[in-house]
Image (cartoon, rainbow, N blue to C red; front, side):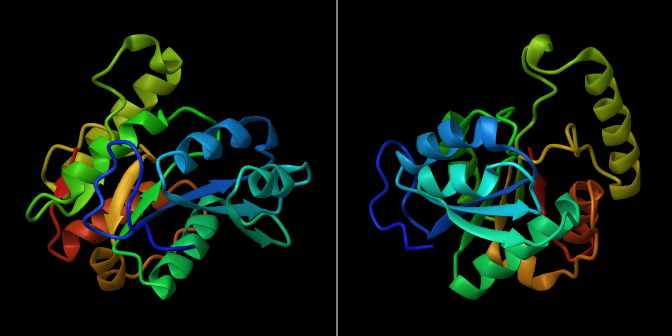
Length: 202
C-alpha cells in the first residue's frame, strides 16, 4: 500500500500508517468500512482468509489491496500475513480493524494520535467503558473476564485485552515473535509486547 503523505480529515500525518483488516466471508460489511477508511487518506490491506463469498471482490471494489489465503487459516494467521506485508512495505504504524463493522472508523484518528505520543507502545481501543449496548451482554462479560485474566498475567490493568481495534508500531512488531493462528492473537500481541518492554495504552 502507498504512503500516506497528506491524509484527509483529522488523521495525524506524522508517520506512515496503513490499516489491516482480516476477514472471512465478510462481503456484506467490508464495502462501507473500507470506503470510510479510504476517505481518511489511509491505505487498507484486506487479508481475505479463504472466504467462500465475494469478500475479496468487495474489498477490491472499495479500494483495498487484497491478500488472499487459499484456505481459511484463522484470524491470527491472517493478521500475521498482514503484519508481514506492512513490515516489508516500511509502514511506521499498523492499524488493525475487524471486518464485521463493530469498530467505528471515526475513532482511527484518536488511536493514531495516541500512538504518536512518546512511549505510547501498543494502543488498544477500549470498547468496554463505552455504551453498554455496543456488544451483546454475554460477549461483554466474556471479554471482561478475559481482560481480567490477561491483566493478571501482564501485571497491569488492560481493560479490553480482546479488542482487535489497535495501533501497533512497526518497531514493536519487529521486536516480537508471533505464532497464534486464531483469536488468541489478541492476547499474544499484548503479552509479547509487554515481555519486550513495550507500554500498552488503552
